[in-house]
Length: 70
Image (cartoon, rainbow, N blue to C red; front, top):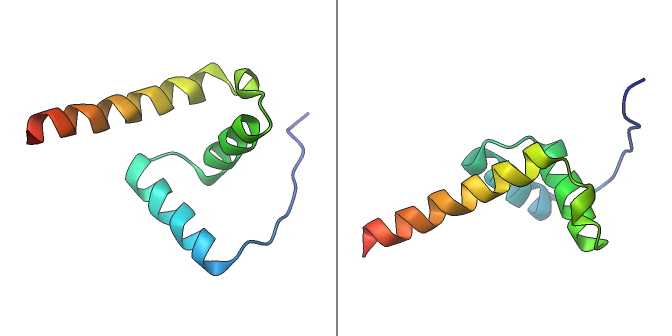
């Protein structure tokens, strides 16, 4: 059985920010939203390990870029 689905409505400006984030990171919208909800609710450990690793890799890449820029 697949995962349950929900439908939400968000302001256009928030959707634009979500789309920009997805484009920058390569994550899916679903992964970004699931991760954000889990962290907001204080249950970040419920996020699958693959998503947590992808987030860490993204943050490491940002740090590496900052170090190289200096």
